[in-house]
Amino acid sequence: MKVRTLTLFLGFAALVVLGATNAGAACAPGQSFSQWDAQTAAFYYSYPGADANTNFGTNGLVGHFWQTGAYASANDGGVCATSSWFKPYGGKWYINGLNGGEGCSELTTGCPTGQMVAMVDTTTLDGTGAKFAIGNATQCFSCGANYYFYSSSWTFRPIPRPRISVANKVGNVVSLNMNFDDVANAFFGPTGTPTSIITGYRLMRAFGTADPGRLPGAYTLVQTLPYAGSAPTITGFAQDCSLAGAGNDVFYGVQMQFDSPAVNGDYVGATTRLKCNSTLANPGQFNPIDKKPKKHA
Image (cartoon, rainbow, N blue to C red; front, side, top):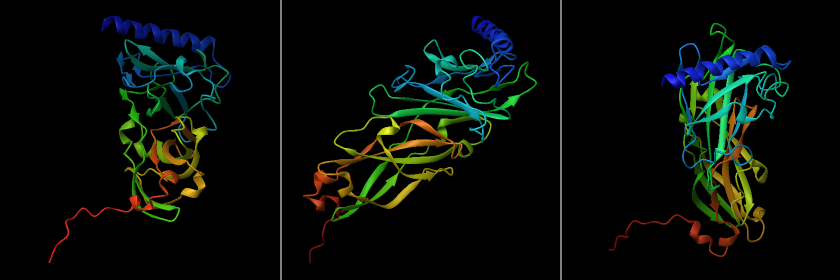
């Protein structure tokens, strides 16, 4: 433990030096943001999970930070390397970055003030799903430097898969009910509430014969379901199978929306496949089955 504490203090000293010498014009002097507190030696970690892709970049760990409620004014610029502030340590990970230095100098847009959101998402190793964790911290002017302290450990949570129950099929149109898992436990503060930062489930759709993967560009947006503290539901959603094209099925997934309407997640979570045109010959399979035994006179 003492060795780790010393490492933290040395790391903080390096951040201060970087803030003084390598700060970008947008954020000078540099402002550290971290899951450890150099003054108290308190530190926390992030846990993507054994099933997560922990390589950086496309299909792996991708992170963003921005001024809460003002993404356009101050953010990571979309090109500040996640590896410069989300770092491995002994099989775990932790946030430890600097606005204005260490790979994030002139690359950032503006300089966050007040509060700052940090979010990291990734795919699963098998490529069938995606996970994320997010926090929001208040700027501290009395901590030896201007910085944001994410004072809890993060455990990545799955981006919800749409759960579909098919109500009925008439002609080419299938009427669907959809349910989604709650994502409140993917928010780790310490400032604000899940609903203040996680603001929507973007229902995404793709047509084809195989899962389109995790990148949003392979999908189109169907609608955004506001997140108000409980998992949203959809009742009586109409899917016209003729839109899918001959032989194609429909794949539904969710892309998370944060700090509405500014920031969307990097990935679409696990999909649910609706057998659409491949089952047109047997529309009766979509009808609910009455499993109650019939009474005989």
